[in-house]
Length: 232
Image 1: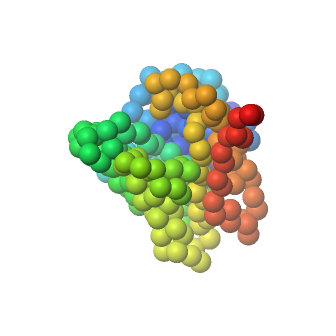
Image 2: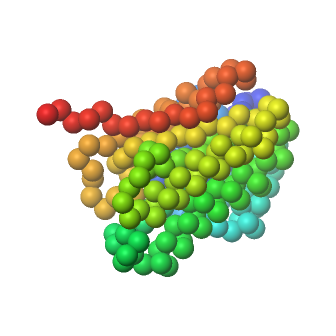
């Protein structure tokens, strides 16, 4: 049975890739977990892998939905009584075509997921995080620090960086820490074909657990992690 004193980490986009690997790494560090994603079947498999219902709660959640996200928080509090950290990780990519030719409906879903979804996660989790003096972690991207021609995805990640900076200032003095996790290219289901030179999801998970492991007086603001350039 899980120790009721163990901290609780909530992860969105937890069913695969970075979210699932972070769940595994945090579980190994003793965290109890609230895992949310659109695919509840994948979450159920991960729940059993990581110790069952005593240690892991799951919920189907579309981060574009305020009601889904409120239900996610309520389920976490019902299961564990607290939330100590939130990893706002849910996101999606775009499609080719640039600003000249991409499908605006794909843009819309991406913007609502990558930007609005993060904002809703922070808002619905904030009361519990202020109570626990907890930790906000957000999946940004190296694409949110450079100019990528024709990339609406990059634009959403610039917005995510701005959210991280903005929420840090909004809650300054509350005891809640804010960390932007900004990976370069990662080998996840995000891509149809495996990138030639990419990070593994576990590499990003280690960045998350590093930030979480710091003492309360240390606020790791940003972690930018890229794959080592390929040998020439």
